[in-house]
Length: 611
Image 1 (cartoon, rainbow, N blue to C red):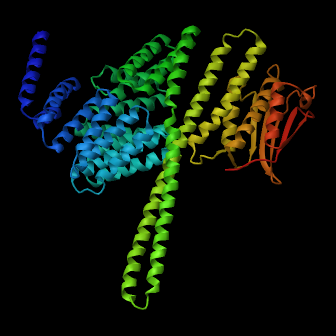
Image 2 (image 1 turned 120 degrees about the vertical axis):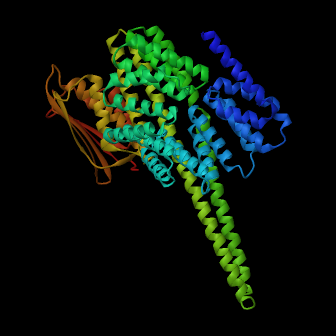
C-alpha cells in the first residue's frame, strides 16, 4: 500500500513538472505551490533549462529569487546567496519588493553562516528597497525586515536596540493590521525579555504569540520557533524537564528548517549535560555535528565540538575529550577571520572619505558664494535665489554626511563588540585547555600553577565579556567587574559566602581597558591569596576590597582578617608577587603590605585612565 502511495505521489509530481515545461512563469508558479524542498529543487533544475528561452529579465529575476529561497531552506548557503545576487542583477527598478526579498534572503543566510556584518548590511539594503512604499505587501515585508534587524542587534548582544526595533516592528504591524508580523514581533520580544531575565514579560509575549497563532492558523515555522523560545524560557527558569520535552517535540516534527533543528539539538544536549545524562548528551551533539556538516553551518559545528569535548570530559574519557577540544579550537578559530578587522578598516576609511567629501563640498559652496558676492549690486534677486539653493544643498549635504558618519560609527561599534566577544571566547578556550591539561598533571605544585594560570585567563576574559555587553566599549564598570571576579574566584577555590564574606567599597568608576586589565590581574592574585591562605581549617572571616580616587591617584586596597603571614610578602620572590610588582610598574603604582590584623595590600596608582 505504501509503495502504491509513493508511486502515485511520484506520478503526480511528474505530471506537475510535465505541465510546467511550457514556460518559466509556469515553473515559478509550480515552485510557489509545492511545499517539499526536494520537489522544489527538481522544478528548479527544470527551470534552469528554460532560462535561455526566456527573454524577460524580470521573469528571470523572479525565478532566481525562488532558487535562492529554496536553496536557503535546504541549507545550501553558498548556492542560495549566488541566486539571490542573480535576482538583484536581473530585477528591474519597479521590482522593489523582489529586490528587498533578495537582500533579506542574503541577510538570513549570512546570519545562519555566522557573518553578522554582511547580514546587517543586507537587511539595511532590504529596508531601503521597500521603505515608504504604499502597497500592502511592501509594508508587510518592511515589518519583517525590522524584525530581522532586531534579531541582528540581539545576536550582537545589544538588547536595548533589539527591544527598540522589535517594538517598532510591533507598532508597524498594528498600524497596517498585519497579524503575521504581529506574531513575529511578539516572539522577538519574548526572546529579548528571556535574555534579559525578565521572565514574566517573556512569558506574557510567548502567550500573546501562541494565542494569535492558534487563532490565525499561522506559519508552522513560526509556531515551532515560538516553542523553541518557550523551551529556552523554561530552561532559564530551571524547569529543565519541560524544556527538554519541547526540544524533543521539535526534533520529532516535520519542520525542515535547519535553525529549528540545530537550536533544539544544541540546547537539548546542554540540558542533558546538566542532568548528567552524558550518553544522550553525546548522541544529541553527534546529531548536531552531522547536521552542521550536511548544511555547512560553521557556528553549529563549533557548538557540536564544544558539547562533545565537555561531555567526554565529564565521563572521564580525556583522550576523546582532547580530540574534540582540538577540533573546537580549530573550528572556532576559523570563525575569527580577517573579515571583521578588514571591515573595521573599511568603515574607518569610509568615515574619513565622507569627512573629506563633506569638507570639499563646503569649500566649493564657499567659493561659489564669494563669486556671487562680487556681483551683488547687479544681481541681487538672482543671488538671493542662488544663495537659497546652495543653502538647501549645504543643509542636505551635511545632513546626509552626518547620517552616513553616524551609521559608520554604529557599524564600527557593532564590530568592536563582536571582536570583544570573540576575544572572550578565545580566552575561554585557553581556560578550558588549561583545565583539561591539569587533569593529566600529578605533581601538586605544577597542578596548582596551572589552575592559577587558568584563573588569570578568566580574569581577562571577564573584562572582554563586560566590554561587549556594555554600551561603553572603551571601559568597564569597576564594581560590577570586581564583584564578578570575586564570585568566580570564590567558586574556583570552593569558599562559601557563609564562611568568608566579602565587602566592597568601590567608587562608581568606568575604567579604561588598558588600566582595568592590570588591575584585574593584581586583584586576581590578592583575592586568590586570601581565599587560599588567610582562613585555614575552615576558619571564618572577611575580605574587604576598596577602589577610590584620591589626590589624582587610584587607591586599591585588599584586606582580610585572616591569620596573616610570618614572612614579608613584599620581599617574596614568588611568581604572583613578581607579577604584582611588574604590573604595578606599568601602572606607576607603589605597593605596600601590612600584617597587623591579617593581611592588607595597598596600591597607589598614578598612571590610569577612566573611560
